[in-house]
Amino acid sequence: MSHFRVALLQLHPGNTREETQKIGLDACHRAKSLGADLALFPEMWSTGYTIPQEEALLRASALPAGHPFLGAFAACARELEMAIGVTCLEQADPRPKNSLFVYDRHGDLVLQYAKVHTCDFGEEACLGRGEEFRAADLDTAAGTVRIGAMICYDREFPESARVLMLQGAEIVLVPNACPMELNRLAQLRARAYENMMGLATCNYPAGHPDCNGHSSAFDGVAYLPGLSGSRDTCILEAEEKPGIFVADFDMEMLRDYRRREVHGNAYRRPECYHLLLEEKIEPPFVRPDRRP
Image (cartoon, rainbow, N blue to C red; front, side):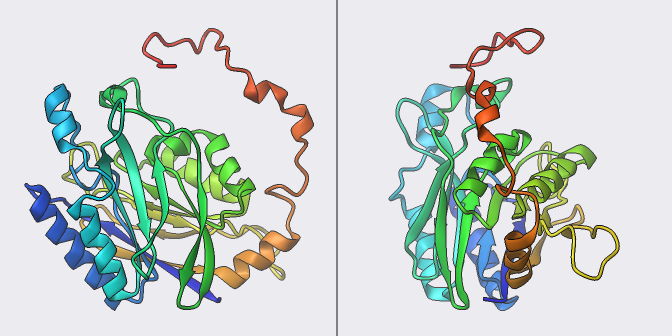
């Protein structure tokens, strides 16, 4: 395939789940009209990243995998023949999780991922967490793309993207709900550069609590034949206001780059990294609110 187009749905949710669903479905139709292969929502779209702290309300807000809200997006993906990555507060035991469901153009669930690095220092301390990072082959009309997923705070740990690279991920989807400022954008740039992968991040627009837009896409291709220096891997940075922003990933260029450049898994020395699996935390990094 030559190109993979991801529509970043940088939108405000509605006041109810039903209204949010309608806004989301309408946005998916608009994304399809823009030629998208996949439409991606911000983090926890089903609640607008609202996390009730009262136990009963939290559980009432969480959706099982077969909930009609998610089913509506699966049906929409099938109708539009376009993949959709929709996010929700997912029903799980012992605690609900912050999750992404990716449905392919046939409406089939191809990737389900729960956030591994929950923000235990904030309101996510009441949530469960995912146990692993996952990659999957996504069928598109133009061919297959290997996708992976991280959610917001996951991006701040190099291991997240590294594990996805080792699973063969070419494009990583990153639903988000926080201010995307210089240093967070720099993290995404680094994850794309060091793993030779594309990253597509979808945030809520300015006006949504603690968010400022700036959804982004990095294609991970830093060097090209004929260029004397490096190129900017940022192929899209949205403004603050609501909108649908389309990132066009050149898959032929990315795949050729991955075959010949020096990053990713080309020259790693995992035999020297044993300390990365050490679970003990020493000062100054000890935090009393960190959960096991």
